[in-house]
Length: 339
Image (cartoon, rainbow, N blue to C red; front, side, top):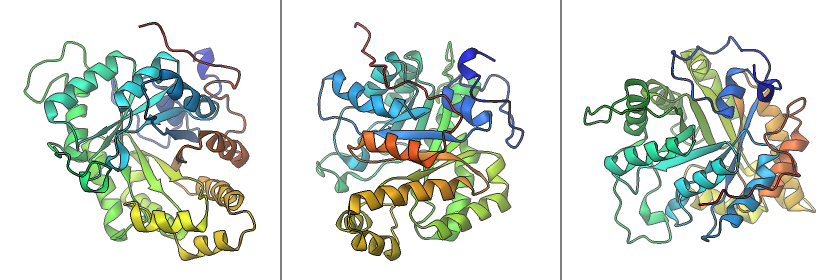
């Protein structure tokens, strides 16, 4: 065990061991396979070409996260590219989760991007179908959808495990990737969600990051079904959480953001609070502490649009990192390597 991994503990026998040669070497994978409660967080991409904007947003997340998600035009809105952010984060010493949406690129471009990301040191990838262009800020854009998340997972697994492009051509040095996918446990049809997740695991997913969890009973039933299917022993699941800013913001999210369910009781609690933002933060901390006790949950994925410092505060207050060494200390101020 290297000095960098001494905070991760011994191997954890609950999960199936990866086949030889399939280990990515990423910190996220090492934390999960060591049986520690993992933390990932989402970096909101800037509308800027300045790398300092990315690194400033990453700094508070690096204090608490085992990997930082670089989103790929989420909500079909244009921002700095996920591969560009992944490059900057990797060069600055952060672990990153490179998100790939199938909406905007065909299989030729995606396979090339995967090799390029691997060459830059990216070791985690999240495979997404992607929101339709109609919900974004440029609805006249032409969608691609050459893949969906399942076919994307199978493709990158083929590249990694068999060293082949989809054409059958050999890859000289295959990418070492920890493969991820997304799920929405709290959105109908509830009974179908665990089976759909199982298909993603069959397709190659090593870890799952869920959308926001606000309805704990629904999520607990989802996890119970995963345990019945034995899927919890085949994949690492990170539950998505995040703070609500106000009751108005919660209603807007519920009505306008695909895949999000917020119960009336949560919104009522926000309405009654003297300080709604503080109450939203408190609810998030409570959810993290409760989710951690659910069997089969391997970690959390924290999302808060343009509020990276609050993400750091929430994770530290939740106590899930007690006894853990963060990826990067607060004093570190990474700078991009010279081009």
